[in-house]
Every structure is written in C-alpha cells, then in structure tokens.
Length: 213
Image 1 (cartoon, helix red, strand yellow):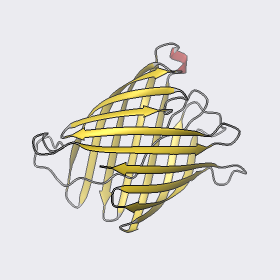
Image 2 (cartoon, rainbow, N blue to C red):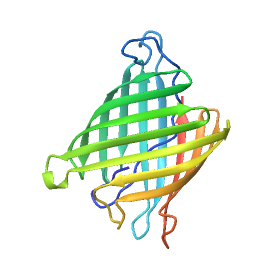
Image 3 (cartoon, rainbow, N blue to C red):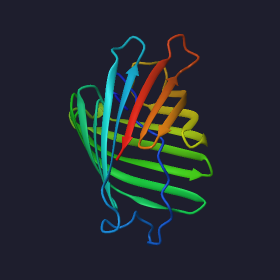
Image 4 (cartoon, helix red, strand yellow):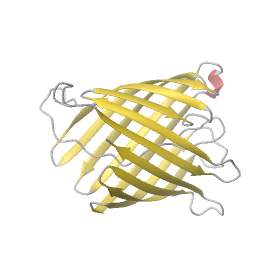
C-alpha cells in the first residue's frame, strides 16, 4: 500500500489469469454470464522504527464491473473506494487489465486514477498495481505508487518470486524497494510472506492472508 504520507506499502496478491474471451475489444464476460465474485485480504506490516499495522482490502467483480475498498493503503487511518472496468483475454499467454478511479478520504484526501493488471504464461505470472493520488488538500503531497510481483508456481499449492514497490514519499531511504515472497494456496485461501530490503539490518516484513469466494 502506498501509505505515502510517511509510511509506504502496498497491497497485492498473486492473481489468477482469465481464459480468453471473444469480445472485441476483449472484456470480462458479461454480467449475465458471470456471477458476482468476491475477494478479501489483510496484510500485516512490520516496518522498522514504525508502528505495525494491518491493511485490509475487499473487492467485488461482476462481469466488467470491479468494485474495491481499501483501508490503510494510501495512508494510515485513510480509506479509499474504487470503481473499475475489467478487460481480459489471451490463450497460452493470458492477461487481465482493470483501469480504475478512486476516491481517498481520511488523513489523506484526494482523487486517484489507478490500475491492476496480470500477465500469465505457463506457471509464471506478472502482477502489477499502481495509482497516482491527487491530494485535494495540498497538491505538493501528490504521489505515484506502484507494486509489482513476478511469481513462479511449481505446484498448485505453492508459489514464490520477486516483489518490487516504488513510491515517491515514505519513511525510508529507498524509492525503489525490492523484496522476495513465498506463498501457499489452498482452495479459496492463500497465505503469503514478503521481505523487503532484505540486505538492510532491519528489513520490512509483510504477512498476507487472502480469501476468494
């Protein structure tokens, strides 16, 4: 999560690639053919020299429609609500893209265009999400944040890979923070651990729990 007003992290979990669609331009299946699906996640952050915190996210999808709510993402004690449009396509190489627009409220207030996207091939998956927050209280606090993961799933229930986040404002000397991840999937539940800045004396640790239903 961005937490760019002096603490910075982001929420992301390995996505599942969608099958190809025949629409032109390609979009997720129509709402009539595709029932509602929901996901929820909670990321616990252990950040050096800062208070630990939890970042929850809830998302709902219905055909092309994507709805999402986040807390402690753009800043602590800050919520955001998002509306997006789902696109998907591909066969051997699958892709998903959801451009979004969000409203941010709380300690940070603003408007944020953003995106979520996934590219999958074989057992490899590249996931990225990002946003640019226009702070309506102080334009000098505008910032861009992005989080990306590259994962390999050698087994249906296990995946590992690299993570990277880039942010403009944080309580850290890094603007680009690399990390590693290891995760486990069981039916509709996942558990993922991250370590960022592993060569630092005090790296940042993140533990994420995700549910799909």
